[in-house]
Image (cartoon, rainbow, N blue to C red; front, side, top):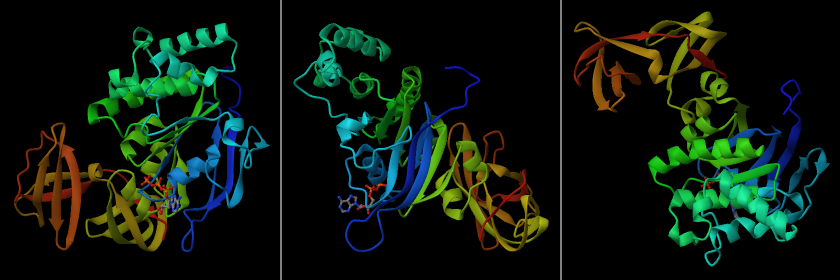
Length: 343
Ligand code: ATP
């Protein structure tokens, strides 16, 4: 790709709505866009409408209101096959009676034979499964099955791939390995992707941009960094990473809180809620201090502490070299400016 070229919009989702029966809509006025080659993670708690949104984009779910455009063309009413969008499901949906190579070739049945065979070889090479081409799905590990599913999806050359919880059947170590691998494979194939996940770490590691949903609505989009540093609400601050929410009284560039007067990352006035990340607090052992370490969880690379200060409980994450014990008195120091949340 020409580095100086502006990224072009691939997908535009505008005002998408879906209601199942009475009550709150499952998806409520959701709008976002996706650029060519971009990886967007749709993130949120269980039942917030992620899969329904994905299924409407794929054409597998009726759209009650709103539109889906692919490269500017309205495709809202198109059949799923006509959209040319690749899908990877939780269970990979491989055909058990077909070999790895036959699974990958499945979507290429309309291609001339030789081109189809060459493309299948290319895809097997891409996912590193050439040597296993004649095996059947039950003869593969979970990670290998997932690579086959991805190769099959990428074979016809879709510009957009939708992945719905693609790692949920893998163990923790394999999930970590596959998320980097899938990211690189999509990148090499030049495909844009929407990843649905409820795993915030997975979303932050993989995605160029996050779109956070709550109760059917999109509540914030932005890069993982932006959203982590500038959460738009208490929900976002607590869903993406952990946060201590504190009430305070803001006066411009500072806020009075139970931890004292703290500098604000952006100006605010009056009663304010602030989000303080556990790693933004430093603890110093001090027998005269009012705060008390109630719980200490050793986590290998760091430690997580639950600290009580009067009627406020705070989560603190700090390096293991500070050896703190349960029952120890500590002084709390805030190391960065704190973020005021919109009311
Ligand atoms: P999860 O992370 O648990 O998969 P999700 O964010 O993907 O959840 P959806 O599967 O989109 O959420 O569901 C959103 C809401 O719509 C839920 O309350 C769900 O029960 C409801 N829902 C989804 N599909 C249907 C359906 N076919 N009929 C009725 N209700 C449905």
